[in-house]
Picture 1: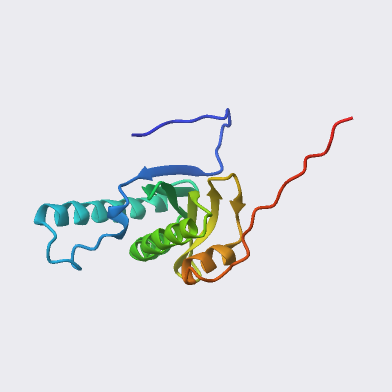
Picture 2 (picture 1 turned 135 degrees about the vertical axis):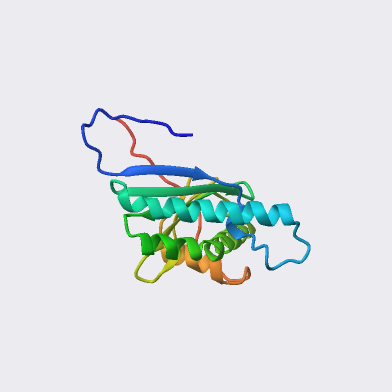
Length: 175
């Protein structure tokens, strides 16, 4: 589905393209399991092929930002790919299963520490050729925008403290 949006600008700065897919298509590798059915392998391979072809076509777009969106364990997960560099797009695509597995682990880790995420956004770093969590919004309204804190959630065992806590916010009193 294509949806045209306008903010009354003659020229736009970026072209946002949103693609929603089932989460399993991000993480599942049909070659890992011998139980996988041939039809499921075909769906997975076809979707990967379509996405790779799509990313190839982004080279001709006007400053594209692709948002690959899915839902995992009640959390919306977005993977952002920016720019026109087709090699970068291929690198992002090739490392997407690892990033999706990291995101699933991050969601689980945050939930176990009572910091349940509603949304997690990952961005691809072309210099390091890997995905990193950019920010997360939590069910209680907090925003975690420190990449190092999110990476710590991803990588540390559940018994460690990483310094996330609730803080009461006082609003200024009106006179």
